Image (cartoon, rainbow, N blue to C red; front, side):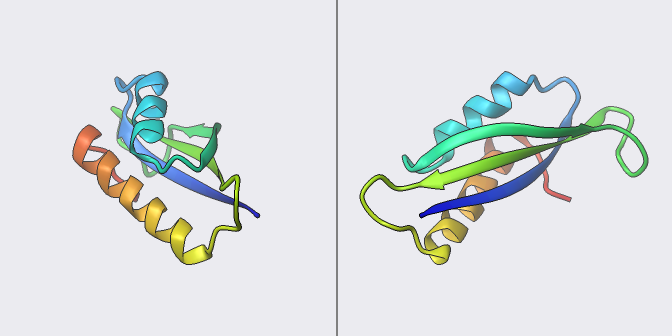
Length: 91
């Protein structure tokens, strides 16, 4: 079973996408199969030095179906790691 989850990350414009992608892949479980950039938004509601980047995360375990609880736990742990390591937010 494949689980797809979008994650919108608010971060400084100066943070390169490659660093964000590498941090996601480093902090995610081994069953994160794919990270795809969906949207990069600058405009109303976002600070002049900020951007919102939406990533599509594809979770798939090679040997069994993932539960929604497993994916949720991994997703929230990933958010915590990104906040701690990169100083990003999710508002």
